[in-house]
Image (cartoon, rainbow, N blue to C red; front, top):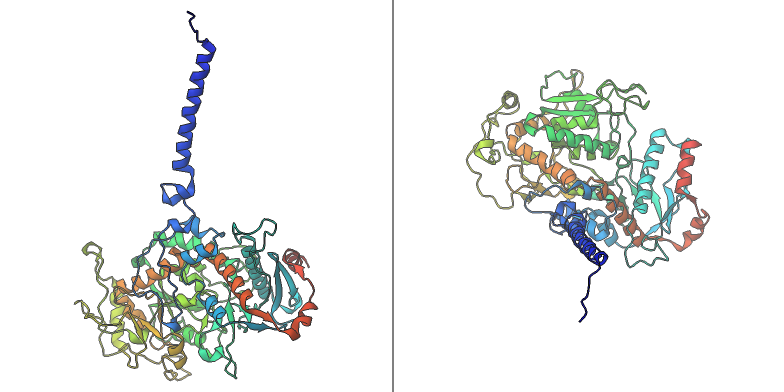
Length: 582
């Protein structure tokens, strides 16, 4: 009977094969558990929005429609890898940023409108989107625009081009037509401050009376993200992403209680809308350095433009850039060092607003009259609703309570000169139950903060108090939010447009530090933590805007020939180089 012998080489090969199999299994296990992002046991590795806590998938209606979240939600900040992801699908965009596209959706719901070719080359820029590419059909000449206008126009066109480049292609899209998911359309873009109907503009009017034609037809407004999302080449600003990083570093190291207890403003005084009167000039005259009455709570000054010098050391963010600069300017992120930031609109909107929205500071402003693309997310406390006897919010825990600081005491003492009603000793008993206090309609009775005509100096009488709120404010901002309710969603404070209750409002907030901090915290939590001012949200908005516009913009039959005369247009890449080199 024969004996089978195992060759030594065969045994070695078997052992080696066994080792290879074992190692392969181990590598596969390591890959599955550690390296596959969307299937990882560690959710922080995922770039899919479904992996992160999100608010309910519910549209936050604009103020005029009475929607929004009814109670405050302590939501965790979204991770940077998600907020910097420019490739989110529309479904992911809407789930991650509820309410982002509300203004676009509202315009689409109104149905089609007719797009007309501008009668002048100084009118809106006309561009075509075709097969996923941007072409410029008609634009104002460089010699007809200032350097600022050219920069703003180019920055916005870069934003549109970037949104097209990062537009994710659905799996159902045929490979033979890689851009079929991007709608072909013709757009009109107005790069001036004043918004124009039926164009992409930087803002829209909040006053319902300005949203219709004399015949009663609805004007169509499509607000776009501000050009600073790409770049704002001023030495003390830069771009929104740069400022967001700087503000994040500052806020991480500076708690609200340690911020400067003053209200800060810098700006150009001659930028006023005729409807606002001398809003900025009066602010500086009443509370600036030349004020006859000491204002220890205010740091207000008009920008002193020097025409081109580099900013002082430590002041500018782009020192040596050779751009226009103001010698007393603050870096845009430095505003976040203050507890209170004063916001003023300009000819229409103010481009600084979104920078201030990133701060964990209380923004104080007259009722906003020009809506940018995210303004509908504001939840205002109206100064005339502030109760002089209201208690502060209860402390989160006994260990976190602290005594009043000297600066706060000084604010309390100044109120004696404003009103005989004492705001300095708020009750600390639990607030009585009040239905609809957190989210209520306008009331006809003011609740008590004193209004005092501002002092404009020895050569001018104090101006008469203006009606507050004006009728248009009641229509544009019908919902009041309570600053002292634990469930409040308030994230900004509206003051009288004549500044008559500004000092009293700051004092009220200083006497209630927890309520003030809650308003400031909610603002930053929404616009920074939940990412509404992030690169991802910007890309989501642009794509939603282009898709919405394409769904309703129509060229009238009689205007087809006029648009055909514009030809195929100049590719954006070529146009942008000509802007720089010619």
